[in-house]
Length: 511
Ligand SMILES: [Zn+2]
Image (cartoon, rainbow, N blue to C red; front, top):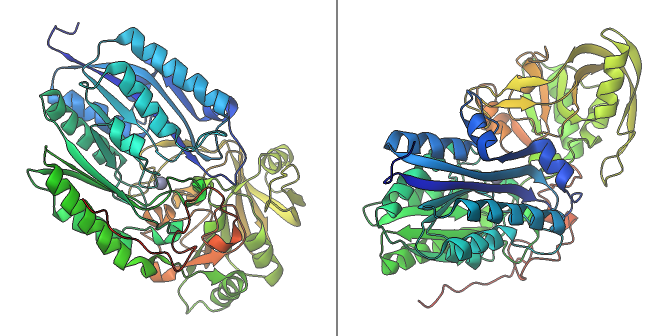
């Protein structure tokens, strides 16, 4: 039993990255992905490979190390990257969270593992709405801390309703646990009486996702500058790129500097970082490779083993950004061009996987891709294929990747051979995070001449042991997550915004 001095911290989270151009989601998608309440949340967190977000794992395990605390598990609901959530279902989640939290009051702190780029069918900032509602319930004096995805769209409401926002610093995201741990350490300080002061600037700069990588390039540089400035006063610097396909008024690269009580320093550093990024804005414009050139390169490396193998990222069909994971332009192109020793995955098509399972290993059949799919870009494609392997589709993320140590369920999975192209077909819509998404099913990635992944950037962590950055090509194919912003009609952004509007200007705030 907790003693009287034990701090009670409520645990909540709403994790959705909404692509406005992707199908709307609701209860089915959330319950199919992640809804954990009360004791079920604690039971999951106690397992070796939890389903809970890595930030929540990092937070709770770090709090355990600080000594005496009482977790008050309220509710975590997540649907990954998808479309907007039905507003009525969002309200249902919010009401349940508030009801459960109220029943547990009083609490000494509230921790959110939030994504930060959700939209509902009616509002563009449910994350801010949720924070503000919880703040209204617990009052102004209870510390409220949230971790955020680096792709969060930051609103004044989100900053104003919380004591601290802690965003990932890595893209590919590999610091979920560390940011959760950081939030825990800050929570301890806040509960001991720390008052934070923050500054927030959002630039009219919405970079396409492919130029938001952090290992190299302008985004990583600006994050590093911010981290170099942490000291006894600067508690946290979070720089969120915004989720391009959210298409909200809150889109734009956001700078949040949180200090231990020094508003002036928060503002100075925030402005300095924003000015730096704005001066570098032209470096955020992507360079993609045309579909035809991608196919040519694949044919070349297939024919000439003296050349280095290549990895083609189908960045426009990234399930991690709301893509369906089933566009066929690269598959069709490679197949028709007779590319050799190519592997492609993971392709989301439950009906095709089921058919392959019914047929069995070694069977050859006319594989009909996207027979049931009606989404834009998910075009049908048919080719003769042989079933190579079958699996129930469970794997654990390989070390170094974005889902390292976490259990991933892909549902019934089939490896199909279409001439020189091997395709991993899965039944759940997930991006290809690491080479294990092939190797687990017997596909030899090391021997492949061309590897095609349906992922925008997270694959880089999970394939770094096999591919150097100069072997990676980003394809300009059609899709729901195309970095070619001219392919979309954005209606929600505040305009002008760079690079969509090349002549956009910006003036720093006159604080
Ligand atoms: Zn993200």
